[in-house]
Length: 285
Picture 1 (cartoon, one colour):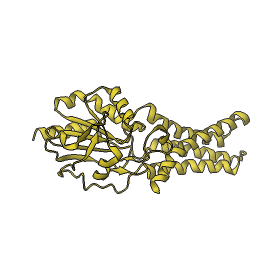
Picture 2: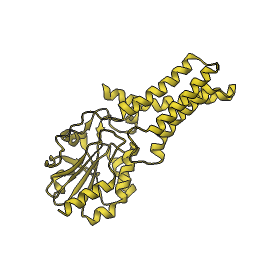
Picture 3: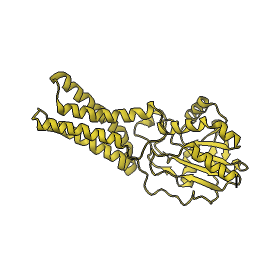
Picture 4: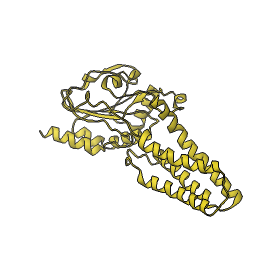
């Protein structure tokens, strides 16, 4: 139930911010300057800029707290309070909109962004990676142990709809030559439909393995399955309601796990240099 609420929240909150932005802009246009609506304008546009920026800037990660954005939202609402102090005309419903903006932002930081109690037992460094089955874009079966013989990086990503996942993959693609020097296999895995995976492969044109986790069977086996993990509404684009928790696994030539990043915040992810340092350490042992 909690994941369903999160799925609805992440679709509705940015839409709500757009609504407040439009409402405050219309009021200012029709009635002239108002501190109250200027504050709501600042708070709402800050939320919009953040979410739009995830898609436009292609950032692979952010800070966990996003303090700069939070400060700007609070600053905007303080300006609204100043407007109330100045006895500017407003409706109680308008103040409720501002309250919902700040509650929504806190919920996004403290509740939506966080993965609680991730299972870190199965993918603990030193364990052998469990055997699981994947599928390539030709719908051919690929077993995880087929990558034995080389150091392998498995990146489980949520899908093409996730801007941070796409930015993370772009970063790794940019390090292709460094990975090739180290004879590393790169395996990118998502439960999304084949056509999206094929589109991603065609976009980057690197000899990585772009694979599908059919019915999230691998994610379930590895303890990284995310029930109802995509934003509500993305199903109309062909994505499944369930997805995978962002996860990076590095295995040695025998399939033993030497590193696993099981982030507890979907906006906090390791940089490619972390992978390269771990691989170099392993190679030089």
